[in-house]
Image (tube, rainbow, N blue to C red; front, side):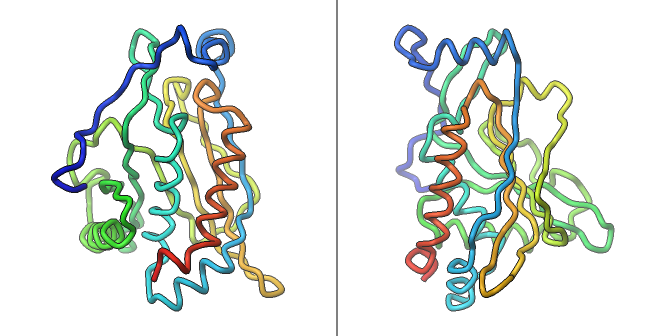
Length: 224
């Protein structure tokens, strides 16, 4: 983030005027509920644009997801111990990097930047630096306003779900990516989204996935 960018902060939601207050209360207290959805995204244009631009896949995937996450308040929600919701002005992606020798992974995070090239350079450097990490969190303390991305490039799947103990206290989204599948000239990517129902409904999940598809479809413009 640039020197002139606003410091990360949360803005409390005005419950008196919030259209989702009843839905939030229901899924936070009466029926605590998280849900997951898995889709096959069409990344044919994205893969071609990556090849033409000579860019690495994973950092570009991360930026694409983070750009859509930061466009919507429901994916930037925080809830304090008293149950009061607020919205982060920005959330940053944390993502996994495999240490192949140890067969363990590290979780690293990068500042989100609307500029793809600046974010890409930062993410590539982090992935290179920490691929031999022996600690799970080699950067030390993790910020509050991060959301999780992990990749399973060895496995194509049609469903993925995380069963998190006390997961009803986790409001930021979690994303899991699978192995590309190419068939009849089309390349698809298994993509799983997990989110708290108090933060987002099916409408919001569908909008997110449709917008992410649009970002991948337009990748020739931002990867160049």
